[in-house]
Length: 79
Image 1: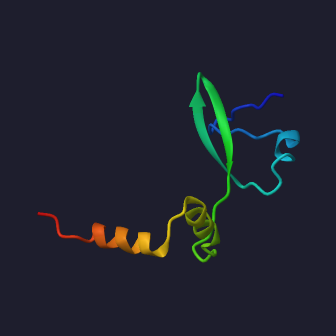
Image 2: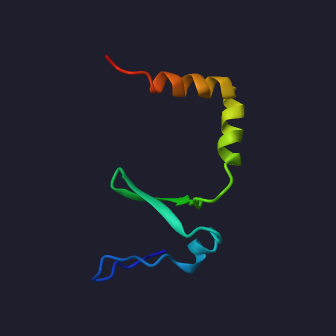
């Protein structure tokens, strides 16, 4: 498939590609070995629940006491 770059440096993704990502509005773009890499990104709103963060902490075995200790350490006065 081909995509043409416009005079405003924009690309239109082919319909067949876009169909593979129906719920994706944003892509992270990078370059690797002279190739453009598009990675789908899901943006969470500010009022989104923190369940994903809580699940990650649980998987890592981080407890509320660990977080409290880290906050206390970070707020220590530096000499």
